[in-house]
Amino acid sequence: MFDRVIGSIRRLFTSDRGGERSVAPAAAVRGRQHNIFEAAATYVSACAEDDQQGIDEASSWVSPEALSFGVNELACRAVIALARERDESPQSVARSLLGLPVA
Image (cartoon, rainbow, N blue to C red; front, side, top):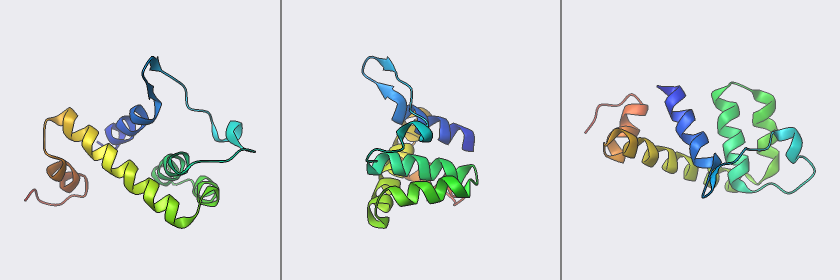
């Protein structure tokens, strides 16, 4: 199930109006300013893969507050995408992902 969440997140960040576009690897984006959404996507992906080096790198790209905002936005978008895919409410999807009983 976690793979589906990560797949949905990746689709959100790789979709483009003209089709699919590739996401540049971390090595390719070094040396330029990173935005909060790049940092959040890298941070969450690194957390999912238990990659401490990736976590540390993404954490250094933006302020802790900006990273927190980006992670929150990513979580909201992922829950909305999964809710649409499952034809369920965002609340039931979020509770399900956290292992909580559906209220």
